[in-house]
Structures are given as C-alpha cells and as structure tokens.
Length: 199
Image (cartoon, rainbow, N blue to C red):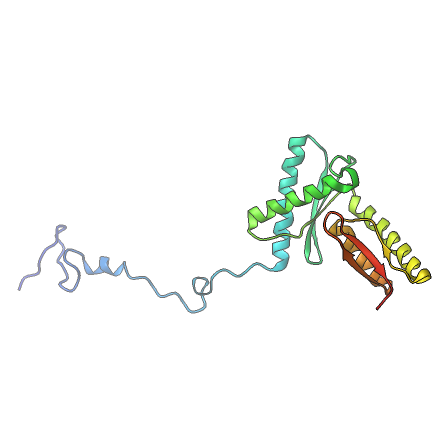
C-alpha cells in the first residue's frame, strides 16, 4: 500500500493523528519535572527577618512620600530589632511628633496599615521621630524607678498616669527588672500601669 502524502508533500505516519507528522507530534509531550525541583516544592517561604525588612521598606517608602507631600525634611532609617521592624525619621521638626506624641502614634498606625495593605499581614512596626521615643523611654524608666522606690518605702501600690501601649511596655519592663510586679488596668485611652510589691 502506498504512503499517503500530506499537504507539504511529506508522507503521513499512520500512527500519528491525521495530517500531523510524527516529529511534530512529539513536540507536544511535556518532559517530567525532576523530583525535588522548584516546580515540585514551590518557592521557599520568606524568613522572619526578610518579612521584617520588607515591613520597614514599605513603611519607609510610605513616609518618604508623606514627607514630600508635606514638604518636610527628614532622613529615614529602617532596621530590625527583636521581633519588630523599626523606622526612624531624623528631623529637627516636632510637627510629626505632636503633643504628647499623638501625631507620632497616628503616623505609626498609618504605617502599619500601609504595611498590611501591601503584605496582607498585621504589623507591629515601631516608628520614632526626632528621637522622641528614646527620650520618652528614659523618662519612663526613671518614673518606673520612682514608683518602685515608693512601693518599697510604703508597701502601697502606685498608679501611674494613663499611657499608650509603648509607654506601658517600657514601664512594665523597668519594673520587672527591679524585681517588682506591675499590671495594666482600665480601658484605652485611660489604661494605666499599677506598680505593686512582688508577689
């Protein structure tokens, strides 16, 4: 029996689909992916350090745009410390700090929202402006020590003024380092630290 001829004059392989030469048919076969390949195991999950670095970068980009819009000067620095991303703005202006750090706290929340929008996960990023938090940290450590001294002298608990979460954490850490006990009471924004004798 004579071979059938295709439209291009080439003989048609009877085991191939009609009108498709055997060598063309072979091109449609996908090679098997080797075991353990990238396709097999998927992309490696980012490390915690990588996640925090990304948070800092996203927040720094957001703040850079904000500074440009507000026509404010400031040098941005992002880094990781412990289990948090940190961003600081080095500036001589206190506009972004506000009274009792109110503007700073609002900016920090906006940065966290920007990170969550970009990454899809909750952020505990910390923002500092003009060294405000570091100065406040030192003041709070002295305040905590005064409260500890008072409890030691009188045996009575000391209730401090209402504070934001950052400030309360600083006080709790300072009190614990002094071997005393502290707890928070009340509701935001009137939540405060109570310093007590060790239990």
